[in-house]
Image (tube, rainbow, N blue to C red; front, side):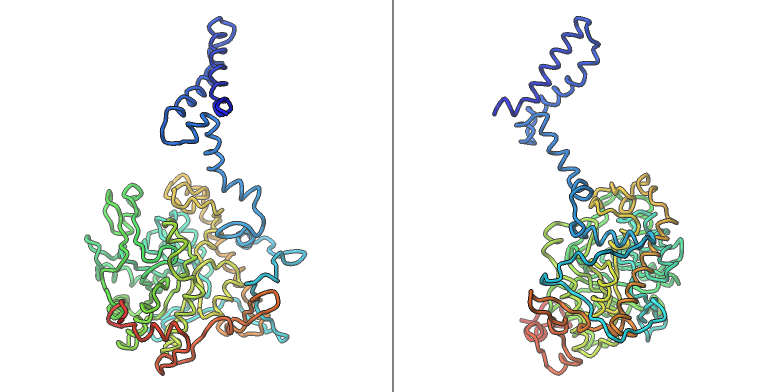
Amino acid sequence: MWANRYLAFWAALVLTAILLALAASHQLGWGWGLIPLALTAVGLHDLLQKRHAVLRNYPIIGHFRFMFEAIRPELRQYFFEDEMDGRPFSRKKRSIVYQRAKAEVDSRPFGTELDMQQAGHEWIGHSLSPTKIASHDFRVIVGANRAQPYSMSVFNVSAMSFGSLSANAIRALNQGAKKGNFAHDTGEGSVSEYHREFGGDLVWQIASGYFGCRNADGSFNDEKFTAQAQSPQIKMIEVKLSQGAKPGHGGVLPAAKITPEIAATRGIPMGVDCISPAVHSSFSTPIGLLEFIEKLRGLSGGKPVGIKLCVGHPWEFFGIAKAMLKTGIVPDFITVDGSEGGTGAAPLEFVDHVGMPLQEGLVMVHNTLVGIGLRDKVKIGASGKIITAFDVARTLALGADWCNSARGFMFALGCIQSQSCHTDRCPTGVATQNADRARALVVPDKAERVFRFHQSTLHALQELVQAAGLPHTSALRPHHIVRRINDHEIQLMSNVLKYLQPNDLLDGNYRYRVYEKFWPIARAESFHPEF
């Protein structure tokens, strides 16, 4: 076993000695010995180094282990991955985006590949009297009673910052949004010149770092916010409380990654780490949050202002609901981000084990607003692995008014799910600040793909809504979605999930344990419960 483990090293050593001897006797040139000599040097280094046990035990050949490990995702994706395989998005899901973005045939022959007897399989109930809808441009009015309400598409670009995405990616997304008349969320990195270049509708996200509207100490600056928020291109303001992939976790953009453009966009200095705190400094209570929303609404000139969150402790969101009742201040919208959402980088524990999934978070937010009689005043957006028209229809049926997609539009830009977003080595120029890599993303071509993906998805949604016999996406309800429970039982989602009736919480009809246990202890004055 000892000889076998060191065979490659001994072979390189012996071959080096032979070739050098032949070169010394002028039978071969000295160049013949360079490669085995280099391998011998590598083997000697492997034996002496103390970092990798594999290399100490298997000099030279141990490097193959690291080489194959490095290309393992590519080997799986291109050679071994089935249509239903692939994480976080299957090849089938990615393919439908690519085909629709490129205006290729997206129909499938020979029937479904899904196991319809598998527990959890879902479908939309169809009608024997389908409708005919004139347009697939489904929209919802956000902030109807404000000075500047916004007509929102039911499918939009979710929050992705300049800094996480390249300049060309931002430009292509915004140009596609402009052409398709849908919204582009800036992410917390503020509004860059690339967001402004083509004039597409923007949702400006304000997070704990207050990028684009901050003082030198990181606190909120009224004047800077006002100057930017009153731009006609900015249609709504979104106060980010948490995101699905890393709720309750702040962020750091290392100084080495901060370019002059990023510094100018965010309003931060060069040469210093950019900190996104885990909490806001402008408020610390549910009432304070709503007062901050009202302040932003006034400073923006009456534009819709809302919040984005991944639901965590139920009593905290219940506290926000109680603050709405107590102050009379109501956000114009709430964007619910599921824990299955994506991010450029996050700790594994947060990605896998923190935050409420979209279905549960969405239903809780919808139910709470229904229960306090404010659902008609507050619109709900939803994001979290939404790719296909069925994903959109299902999410709208469960309680959302519109959907956002981040990774779906990244695929439309050409993302191949290499999962190298955090390395700055994105192979397609989407998630990188490397100018050479970003150059590969040709803006006019990718903008057209973004536009086509949006239009094709809405067209497919139109066909689903028509098949269900409905006049508009707003008519979708939980009973239109059916789920297989086991191999002999199916249920309407209206029976699987638990829904409140209007004003239930005001009347003390808690119905379900989560409300019975946590609604009474939630407080408008604090995010902490009253035990």
